[in-house]
Length: 248
Image (cartoon, rainbow, N blue to C red; front, side, top):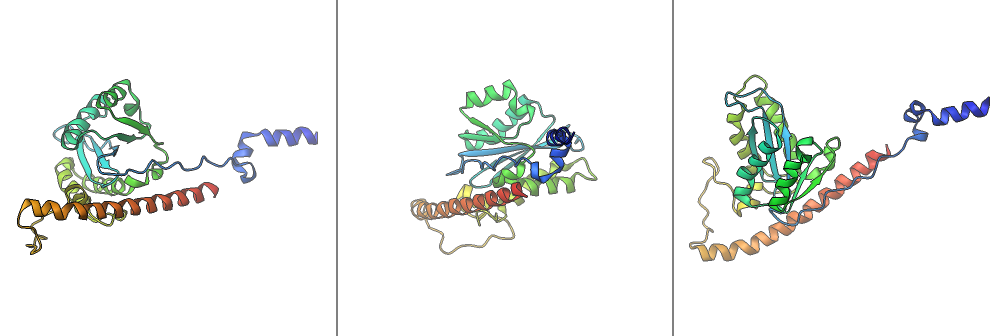
């Protein structure tokens, strides 16, 4: 009788799930391979559904460069694979070229044969991460979190939220990012963004384009090296944090 009871408890799924002694630890955090340069890796995500706009859009597609953190934001009428593929091509590839890698979650529209074929034709390697552990995708979690908060705010009482997307994109790309210590705009363009309230004539600005290029290249190399170092440090901190959580 005692043996039967003991074996029953040991094999009881409910008991095992409730007791730490029999708790199976989660798989260790596997960080996404670090991007080494701008344009190498893109992370895309879908937000919505939101209130349908007068133009018929209910979703938002975000596309973020893993190195520079530069974000592109596009409204979508639906989340069909063909719609996402076209929006990604028209709003990202046309302006930046094809990334080597594309990081997506496990949503069905990213796994469809149509989207798989699109990536194959474009020469893009697609990598999936769990949609239930988005915090593991630490490089873009912060911009996406900021975007989600902004979308929640501007779409709460209005259906014209898509009119605010360009301003949202400007704000995110011109702000200093905590991982790179500089703005996504600067890393993308090699200069600070000019806004009406920030522009001042810089006396050190080169007088011709050749002098500008000579000064720009060494400066960008130093900055990119610092960014890469900062990103690696951030990745390590995320890895340690998630490893700690998995043991709790």
